[in-house]
Length: 228
Image (cartoon, rainbow, N blue to C red; front, side, top):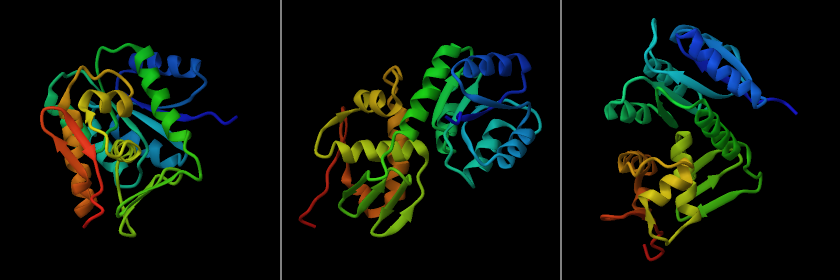
């Protein structure tokens, strides 16, 4: 069985070794880069990278720039690492299309668990798994979304969020429930993550974004109005 290939980007060799050792132990193949420019070179030289673990603070090109460059060409899942706890950093990462955000210091076991959760969801789709709701069609195997026949480009997390909404049409979903199911770990009840992604998702879906209803003080509900 072919191993999933993961790119680990950090200017600290000690940190790269720590993460690499834990990933290799779980049977992943690991590529490394010590700065942003090297990360971009390695990423585009290897077309089969399954996931990127990306430090924010790096010389030559920081993690934001690397994430932005990757997102121009690929929807590969990106986990960002930072030593800073500023919530603005986190929102910046999500705006650039990052899928996970982990503050240093962190437990390598938790990092590996999140890697496995993302790859499990990415690899577990069925070729027949096509969902439709109103103007929206979601092809989980191809990781594609169309609205009224026109393709819409979503980040990995936006795609997962939309699929979860469609699978739970008509149900009132709390932010905590969404976080636990889409992010697959306890995000300490931080609603900003959900609200930021919903705002971007609505915008990208255009008129179909109206299917995502806000339930004030609780969360969201996905509902198609068939009378329109």
